[in-house]
Structure formats: structure tokens, C-alpha cells
Length: 112
Image (cartoon, rainbow, N blue to C red; front, side, top):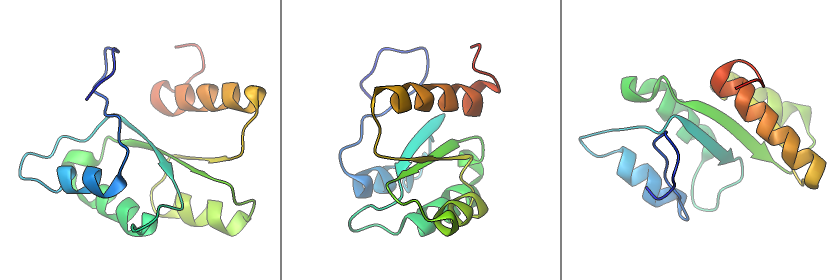
């Protein structure tokens, strides 16, 4: 953990450490995961499938981010259980759009 919000949150520098943490006996998934589609040493497709198969993680909202502009990558991420897809890189305006996307995914509207 390590952020001051009313929500549970983790600051993760290593995706494998996060995956190991979630694989423990007391699984507590976060409410939101901003997931880079291309993670070294981890198959993001496998992680998406695993998270959707674990009952404790079914509530988890996942926004997949990638630098790819390939529509097949977006379709695959959504088919594997991502709630939304965001293409990088981002300038300031696109970064603000990511905030709006997260609000829609978590709250159903940008008014939250």
C-alpha cells in the first residue's frame, strides 16, 4: 500500500511481485488496476485471465494501457477481461482523458 485515498491501493514497481502477492492465501485485489500490456517477464494475457477467474478479483476494474495502435491488441485485451483500453504515449490532454476514463470505469460517469 502507500497512497492516501479512501480506496485500497498499491504502488507496484514489479508486476511479478504483485502477482505473487495476489497468489497468496489471503487474496485481496485492489479496486482498480492500470496495467501495461507489455510487461517484461509476465504474460499480460495470462494475468488478465487469471484475475477474471479468481472470485476475489472479479470486482477489479482493469484499464489496459499500451503504446500499440493495433486494433487487434485492443480487441484481445477487452476479450480477455479488461474493462477499458488506453493508448499511450500521453501528453497532458491525453493524461486528463485517462483520468476521465478511470472515472467512467470505476464510477460509471466522469462526474464522480
